[in-house]
Image (cartoon, rainbow, N blue to C red; front, side, top):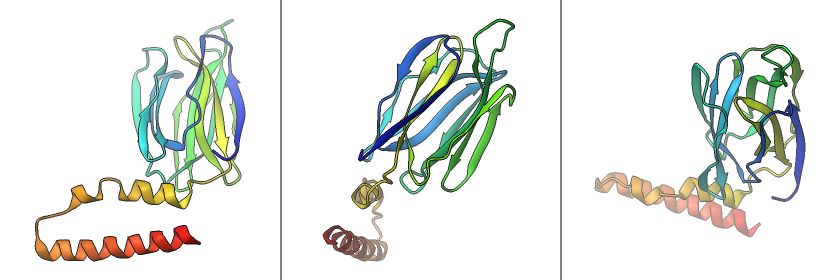
Length: 193
């Protein structure tokens, strides 16, 4: 990554500290939630390859969702939410999360109650998460990159496994081969600029 900025964490001090590190981007988010965000697990992109990070938080929650992004065309640019205690006298936990990509807004998940937080990446994107987790997702912070995935990374993901898509129909292969040939010419021209 060219330049990484840490934002947060927002939330409480309960649970254990965790840090997923810095990656190329976010491919998928799995949330378990109910009265608060019980757990989060991220599948990151590492230069065209998926990387499944550990699950952070507890085992409770009555609902779950899996958010799949179309990385590298769709990148995670903002997260907002709320945090506060779920029991009187307890430490704050993440109560709700809403995710925003360069193409759509997803959520909210959980209960929008407590202290709100939000931020914008100003042209960058989220490349990692960190925070604290115990019985719940206690706090959440973000690693931001100001650099969008470069052209080589975008083409690398686009062409990965392309030969597995070939169909035995001769006419289709001819069309597919000419498309691949023209896309490779575009890649060559773009990389030599």
